Image (cartoon, rainbow, N blue to C red; front, side, top):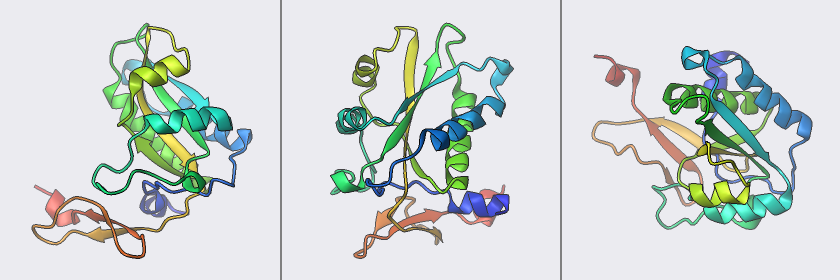
Length: 189
């Protein structure tokens, strides 16, 4: 698959086949990818926690917020919940900031996951303090993002935005997830 196709197929997926687990081999290969990404000043300040034991996934799930634009949706049902998570953390003993690195890492994780047939969703809305306490993370570690993982069971359609259309994603009656994207001509100055 060419790179543009991989980008186009890598969408935020919020419903997964909970019966299909991810192997340790797949999770390791996804995480291996971040060793090779650029890092500001080559500081490599981000650290990762893999969560794939059922009990841990069950404990983590209630701390997460899903799809802010879908006001009437409280998140995936039990049979559609992620089967694994990667918690992305900042190691403040190495540097107090990693803003550029976070975006690079998160997209790399998503692209690598998709290249393995795994769907994902970047979560930034969750109870950071409770997550930190749950996994007994050191005081120097700051929880930044969580990447939910699994085999997707929803259809996501990317559509060109029309003039004055909202940027908000939405779901239709068939539960197809629609994502409006600005056209290239609208991105150019």
